[in-house]
Image 1 (cartoon, rainbow, N blue to C red):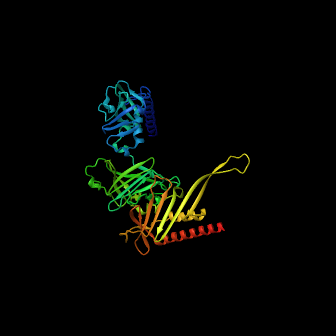
Image 2 (cartoon, rainbow, N blue to C red):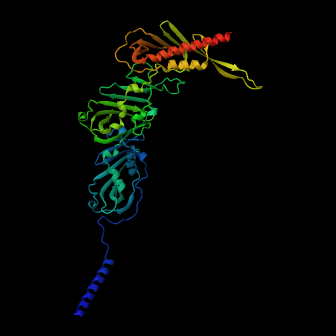
Image 3 (cartoon, helix red, strand yellow):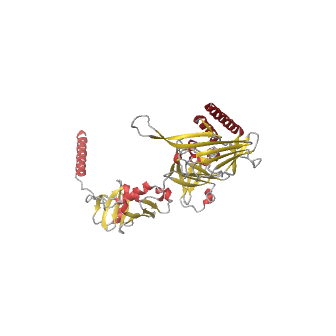
Length: 480
């Protein structure tokens, strides 16, 4: 019995050894997809700039080279992800094979190339064409089977080419709409249903002496001439409290909408247009998508998307917060005379500037030219420091609110007229009208939109009298 089990064990060992021998020496089966015949390099020597048009099939996406900028079918140009388009075009220009599978294939169906599912067709600047046919994906490797028009060989190409040529239209949409530097704002338009339109624009004529403080003009809602705007509270409208207004798509909702009323965009409920020196955007805003998002689209665009409400908080800005409150912003360097009149009082401030030659005190030194300033109140020379404080008080008068109702009378109780050094700039007139116990209505160049506290005006009157009295006293003492 023992010997019988020994024979059985030996027999099984022999069978196992024969099996191992056969496995090691078995013939290699022919691969279904063929084995590499040779290594291959790039199919052609072109760059992406040589491509005038690239068509991807079956998605029927048409990519056109427009002087270095890529246009994609009906995609709104402002929404095109140029980097993604360039990647796809570059993939075509630099297409190369990992290896050649068959030089003369007898059966293209095993590669999926008898009826290719993906075709990339490029028209070059020189008028020629180059076409790539993609077949199936390799079952075990990150490769695609491919053929080139005019070449019957079958190649294996890296999967990145297949992914690029199989792009869908959604892949070419950029979610980053714009990044606007509010410090460098050049234009802004804010419209909301039921609210006043805000329009701000960079001014063309600016004073060289105001250090850019008069850079922006408020065009709307106020009609008062020369309304200077400022955006000191821009931090309230940016995500991080910085200067950049970042606008970004949350979701693309409908790339080719049929009925805009579904999104409240047939009659937009708001508009937001902003531009700095380098970037600009003009959004139309529709109804709310939910508590945090609103439907939107580009003006003159057609794709509907959503945007987070907290990215466009700027649309809720109060125009009075953005208007510069000075009755008139004018540097003392730009003014030659200010007339101030009320009741039986009349004051006039004059500023004279003269270039004088100062003889040198050291032997051999060249004469120097200095600017001589003369400041007068009612013709009496005043010291520079109190005069500049007085001018700052007058020009520093600011409005306190938007007027409600109408002024009590058309006759002013006080008038301030600025006369400029530049003869081409006409005088600027400000009138204070009766309004209430504590407020004057302000009529600026014929337009009445604001009120000012009487207390501010009374303080300016007192300072006028004080500076004139001091100048008269100094003049009297100097004559003794």
